[in-house]
Amino acid sequence: MIVIPNITTAGFGNKVFYYNNMRQLAAANGEGFACPPWEGKIVFDLTLMEATDTQAKQLPFCLGEKFFEWSTIPTRSIFKLKEFPIIDKNHCSIHLRGTDFHDESRIESVTVGQREQYYFDAIDSLKDEVDHFHLFTDDQNMPQFKSVLKKLQDSNLSYSFGQNTADRGSFAADFLLMSQCEYMISSPSTFNIAAGFVGVEKKIIHSKDWIDNRIERNDKFWIDLANGGNDDYSIWRLV
Image (cartoon, rainbow, N blue to C red):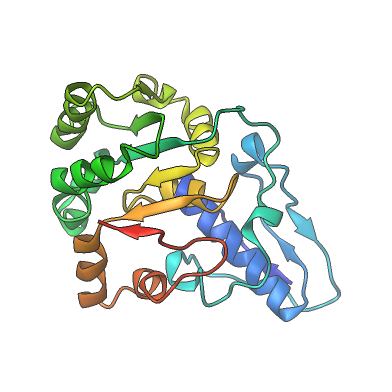
């Protein structure tokens, strides 16, 4: 059995990745799996254990570096949503991540991965395809968030805010709404990316500057994504 001994104290997106890696590796090896309860049960109809008569093997904490390598079963079959909002087609999520992205080791996630011009160009590229934008952030004081909001207003585009923009405790509502958007202007956040590989299949936009940066840094998840990703998560358009 593949076992997660402790689900991790990291954010929700990281937990989704970790749990997914456990399920994918178990499926690839034809083994069972087990992990402790976690808040994924709030939004997903999750199975926490399927026992097999095989030796228990602890899975060290792992994220995107194993996402494509271990891909065996569809993520949408693993993460079945308990309930979700019904929205029209041609809606787009825009995600900006601040807070813990401000620490020195991850500052490029903000300065490179979330440049204002990336969001501006992505919005412009969708003006004739998208009817409504949903704006999500965990940091309303983030300069890029303020600039993107002004861009939507100045362009007379229809938009609304995710609940978590005002209430950090409403992560589930934001995640579920994001998961149902047909288009996604993505950030480097695992929360955002996880919403991309559950719910409806999406047309996902990423920053070319960010992808190039991560390839230069030999970051496996982004290299694999740049090479085509898979049926669960791939780039529709680089901007």
